[in-house]
Image (tube, rainbow, N blue to C red):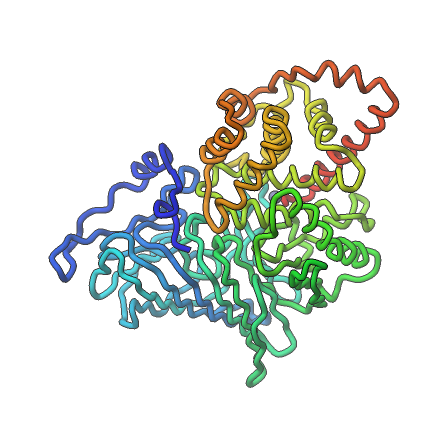
Length: 522
Ligand SMILES: [Zn+2]
């Protein structure tokens, strides 16, 4: 739950840049014991999003008491945040966009606050000593704003729907509905008490603890105890058909599909969600044990939701992943395999800075290759080769720097495909045994924590005993198509019928993945 430096995340150059970006907090006053106190920084220092998150404290838990009225779209909240100061603070920031604050207390005493863009700057009555555990209570409310996915312009965030609301976005969503230290580096546990009119239903991360009705309103308590990045928190309000079940391995699954989704589309969605058991089995065999106490999916009948997101333990899906370009129901198993893979890579093992997004999307795309292999469609070798062959050397596909793509290319197709190709190039270089040892150790050693690309390279070198700088420089940090020693041989091999059929199947995966990404990020 507490994070960053204590967890051994190496920020390296990123932190040095970040310190320059956010400035050095000034010495502003003295605490009760005569030590100087500082103003907590306005960001954690992510080079891509300097104002995301805040400095000077680590959050342990959020208790969010939220009332939402679909008739007015109004949200009223009381957030109770438990945190620990990591420096002696005269003041500190939370992130909150578009909602009005009416009261702030620190350790149950009124505090003063100011607003500056997304920053909610809180000044407690007395400075908070370094190491002090404190509680911040914020009373707030209003009509939540909606964001856009960088580079795509599609709506994200707190989205109102015909029968309620759905909450998902990346990299930004949490600030639209609660005051937060909004960066994945500060994971925390969450309790959601969501109150809606009787008849509406609420789904969220984690486990449903209780449902209580009073005076025409019903409060749904969900608990997500396992450390979670703020953008992975979701509450989803509507009329749901719930399926609560267990996998063969005994994992609790809770699926919620909008009751308004029926017919052939509904059949495809139900079929994919029923295969989560199989997906988890295939991915567990590759990555190690499923990292959380529960799983599931949420599919809303919202026309303006175009993407899927790996909201922790319970991914949110656009219904469009189960509709082809003509609007006919189609198989959507790959998107479920992809989001499930993110439970390991993205959620349990989360980013320490957004530029390393390939550690999420490259791994989840590689999981699609594993699923394609399980389905008998194509081997990872074939998926790799088909992807390589599909993009000539002068294609813009090769101009993105995967290990540092920039904000507008954060979720671009090359990050997904070339991220997966990087992993396959590693597999080819170190062999299957070392490769799977690296992947499993990556998941196990970083469970609940945050990671960087440099850490992955270091682990790959440590486990394999090989010097891999050239490989990662070529695949992650060079905006050009790598030379492939085996490319000519593979092209020759495609002359055989068997190889041609295999290449067609892998090309089928690629075409499907591109069609999915055309619909929305996932
Ligand atoms: Zn993804």
